[in-house]
Image 1 (cartoon, rainbow, N blue to C red):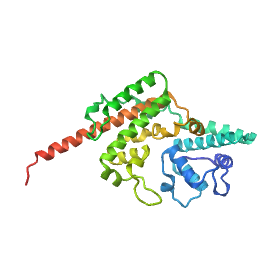
Image 2 (image 1 turned 180 degrees about the vertical axis):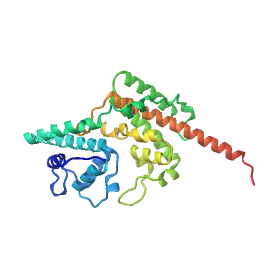
Image 3 (image 1 turned 90 degrees about the vertical axis):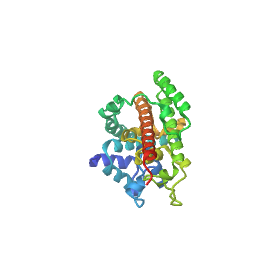
Image 4 (image 1 turned 45 degrees about the horizontal axis):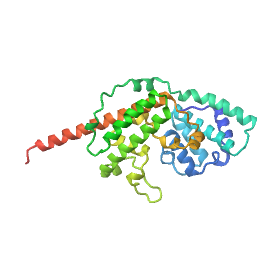
Length: 290
């Protein structure tokens, strides 16, 4: 878990305007969406709906690992900076100094060049046979074309294009699989619930983060895909330049290569899942009838 010293907390609370339970210009709903997008957790489900925004942020500081706390704080700092810039307000000298100090403090904690990323990139998922994917998937030819286009974008040094292609392809494949297995998907842990009605949302309203979480809980996707999916699950946020600016997202080639590896790992998982289903079916048809 992250351990922020008292001085760092004081700096953060000052620049985020956390007196009175607030955090910057967020409402409860927009703050929940921001946290979900930034670090992939459902904050009010995990920490409780009764918390103020400031208390929720403090709970995250105490309850989440260093790299997630650093990532969230950096995105909040960038949100504060961009909001001020778009409103035409110049930051004070104190705000500018705090921003620079805190960014320098947290940036090294989310450095992408780490042993876990290196090990994941080095994994060999073998030759993916798209013809062996689950029969419910009808878009194998499109997936194959996109895999080639992803290679082309990597060779051209276009990381943002890679992230868009990977995110949309993975979302499309999992959405099609979810619709074909709707009963299992909507009943699985992690299926998104509409807070107004209390009912599970229709699958065609699920986001990529929901599809990944449920597919992982159903053991369709491996731990590798679930762990490294941060690199693609929020791809829709960066389609519009203004949103990309607001979140301060700067795609890197390493991020793009990890995204490609996530897609390859997911396809390998789906191929394995399909083969397992076929084996179970063959075994069932060979059993004698009592």
